[in-house]
Length: 531
Image (tube, rainbow, N blue to C red; front, top):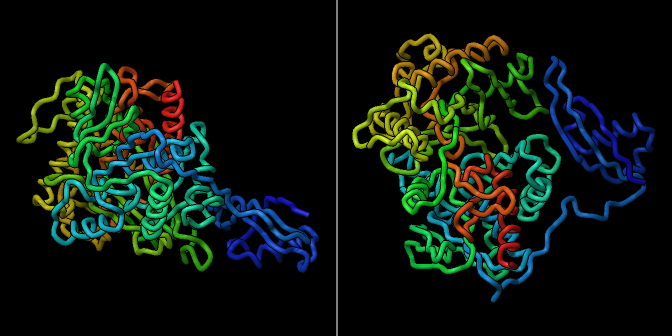
């Protein structure tokens, strides 16, 4: 007999299979010796009250042996000699597009400007030591995309767009823990992702696909209004369809598309700072206990959102037990991101704290940043939000003494508009420099953040504290551009054979949603090539 139950238990009961078996035996009347296995289908923590509970959906095997895998593997065929499709970018959108193309009998040719995920790690580590950013191999560019070394969270709200469970199953097939199938906020971890990414690449190659690293796409090849391939730093690749999955930091791609008259448009984004607390403090706040999380609970997460002066202010990409990292993709710019290892056991917890910015906000006088070397961008330009983003990143670099040393301020000093004469310890490896961020951040961003922090402090006692550090700046929450495509065919509205995809195209916001979009684009390519 196979039974499914929804139960609400204390953390020590949810901690292991034997405890769950004993609880179900007592509560549901099954003899303990008859319970052969328990599989957790869903897991979430309810920390709204002082007594913390774990909500579980479990499948109980009573006098039966589980015969099926905990995940559903997919079958990938050999596509040597099949029709080629070019995939630009080896982030989640590009990799999952390539896997889906193989399922559909097409041969993916993946071109990636950065290095493979293992070689890339060396360049990423060097940023903290040398303060030099390799423009082709960094936290944003390289195999795995921006998510490979910035946490690996798999939580998404875009459930209407595709088969999220299918994406998680593919991750499990390539080495991820099956726990991601049950956790409410699944997480791979920056220490586990490289191996998973390598396994996906090996699947692509073993099935007859191609993966080319350090191969930057410089331009599209176009003939009679149709894409016929791409020109790269290592030569031309020809195909009747191109999936463009370059990520949200490929500014040169946006400029190339604009110069060729390819239809793109400015898109609203969110910008702000990275906020770092001691993880023990967040545990005490979120778990309502002076002892923090104790033995059986994970590092605590939080999520805050409010409205200030008609714009959203919210936490973004929360990294419990994680670190803040330098996320520039070119020299002479400074921006930060956050990441967590799979165990989430670090001394600090951080999140982006950002303000919603609409396209018309860029024209406000408070949004004007005068930086030498930047030309004015017309009000109607689709590049105007990207230009604002670039200027803020350059300004932050200047405030960081022209290095990757990040400007920072104690949280309470930022709110009360005071200079921090000292800073607490931080996970940010390149180092912090005390800076009056309340003075040089654009006013319409700074004032909303300050009011948002005060609101969050009132709703969560202890959150607004001198122990927390505000670190600048967080600017790459999503793409500042949308490459306009048809809602039905996912093909560019004017250029046949071009399929804009994922975060870089403005149609996704994270690993899972980008992967879902990659699969959808692959299906659309297959339909296009069959016509």
